[in-house]
Amino acid sequence: MTRILRSLWKHVIRSARDLAPIILVIGFFQYFILQQPLDNALALASGAVLVLLGLTLFVYGLELALFPIGESLAYALARKGSVFWLLTFSFLLGFGTTVAEPALTAVANEAAQVAAGAGAIGDTDEARSNYVLGLRITVALSVGTALLIGVLRILLGWSLPLLIISGYIMVIAMTTVAPPEIVGIAYDSGGVTTSTVTVPLVAALGVGMASSLRDRNPMTDGFGLIAFASLTPMIFVMAYGSIIAWI
Amino acid sequence: MDLMGPGMTTILSTSMDVLPIVLFIILFQVFVIRQPLRDVRRLAAGVVFTILGLGLFLVGLEQALFPLGRLMAEQLTHPEFLMQGADTLDFHWTNYKWVYVFALAIGFATTIAEPALLAVAMKANETSGGAIHVWGLRVAVAIGVAVGVSLGCFRIVTGLPLQAFILIGYIIVVIQTIWAPRIIIPLAYDSGGVTTSTVTVPLITALGLGLAETVPGRSPLLDGFGLVAFASLFPIISVLAYAQLSVLRERYANRRKTSTRNEAESISKEVI
Image 1 (cartoon, rainbow over the protein chains, first blue to last red):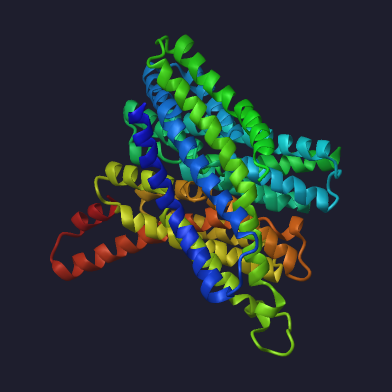
Image 2 (cartoon, rainbow over the protein chains, first blue to last red; image 1 turned 120 degrees about the vertical axis):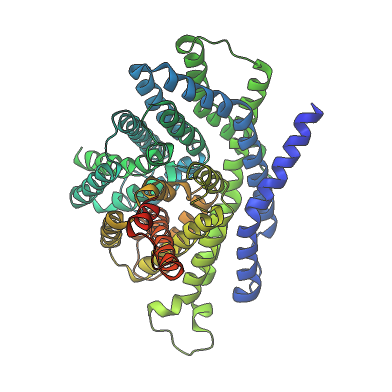
């Protein structure tokens, strides 16, 4: 128990160090440039403490439970060589980690509020939570698909730039048909998905696979999964927006 | 302080989010890999920590990060602050110079501190056999994010179309890909997604929405989003540029050191 508490404390220090630059920049601007008192400084400060504590517990919990199992699973599956299970695993990993991603939840909530305020969806709790759920499921599906394609690429040795450029072309093509009010949210959902939960597990999957396959270089073949995971959500969310507008 | 109510519901709904992935990983471990779970107590503690932490984080996010991003946007675009002693205020994008400076600073600071980026940089340093420096990569990515967020704010202020910027960005990436050293390409593509972390995303999103709400003539829905997209596109460009610059520098140094050196040898070195 004391061991857990001590390493938890180390994690608190580490998160505080990660958050320090943000607080410094904001503090500098408040004090020297804006020279205005912060409204509800107390609520902001207690919220910041909650963010710090929450992030620490979250990352610490991931390191205790999900990361070690996920990583050893990725290695074991890559070594086992069953393509079917490897693909199933990649899809579910992408879907599961994205649904649980806090940044996505936060941005989806914000998007629902903005959309309701602008009259794009009904201004009721139900309409908003449906919109949030729809966005999250769409993005999760797209990340699952991205990992599926990415793992196939590593297995078959497809060219990464070629796939990425085709993805770019699809993004541009979708932009011309999608309703304008979804475009900004769609573009942002690409960057949102790939953070705390997803990146470590996905990086382990890619580098693990590339190092256990023959003729594959972990540097050129192992990286690239995250690139897919931040490209497909744009395409999927624009498709989702078009379908909603069409219905 | 009414924290308990929203705290409990948030924790309940986060458990619904986290449990599926826990179940799926356990099922895979037991039925596909056919290995028993070791250290079940540690695992249970980890899952409880994950759920609690996620709940607390989301409550704190609503209470601190979103309001803070909004507040900064409001104060930086407040007419009194913009006028700075001038009598009348004409709408001009240069009036918002402190917004761009703030965006630059917050983009750089959050990226340098980003743990996911550090992890990927260390992995890249290891797999490239030291050719990619940890600090070089981190600074390159941070510059990319800083420029991206700042340019994104400029776009919101001016109301220029998001698609045009993204399209031009894509074209630059494609052109760079043709000439960049092959080894850096997957890493560069990945660095776009790595940078936009759990703390940065809400803060930047709130900043963009706040800007779109306060700058006259902008709609939050149409103009407010897009900062995260910029923050994940520009690192690709800056990392590719970093790789191209290192190649150029090495080529220049080689030429100065031994002009008699075999051409083929130096070319093979550049490729690596």
